[in-house]
Amino acid sequence: MERFIFLDFDGVLNTGRYQQELQARGETLRDALGPRFDPQAVDALRMLLERSGARLVITSSWRTAGIAAMRNLWRSRSLPGEVTDITPFYMFGTYRTSPQAEPFMGFTLGCRGLEIAEWLTRHAEPDASYVILDDEEDFLLQQASRLVRINPETDLTPADARKAGYIK
Image (cartoon, rainbow, N blue to C red; front, side):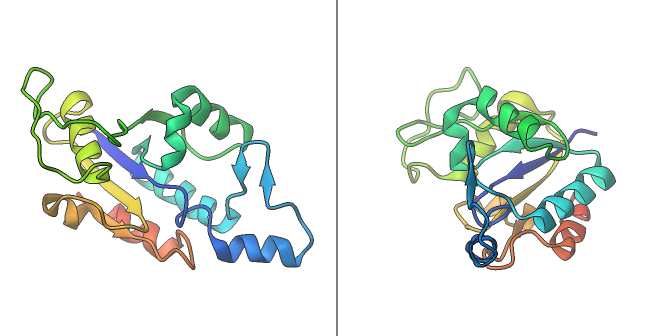
């Protein structure tokens, strides 16, 4: 069975707390690719990826730089796993229930839940297992049981990773 992790960055791998910690130590807050990620959150993601065998799909607003930029970020920072894809970005988009269907109108623009739903429709088997790691809640009701809401002050923790590992 296919398994996917839909991953946000800000509030999950990158937090104000870690940025303050870097600042207090006199270290740089950013590299050429953006704000630095908390190593503890990256370790929790590594644990989840190793245990689940899931593939990463980026939902973060950082994805607007494109799939090549996300893969470069992953390689440059030696992050765990491999970026499989990015979700579509619906600032002004439309959702379709299938690639051939007419657009469904009347949703909140930029809703990550709809972006994930379309990605799944286009790229995954109907019985695919997935989890969403995000600090926000702009998802569909049918996705609520798949969301591991991350506390943006603590970022992704081992407890969050364990919880995500049990979601089918």
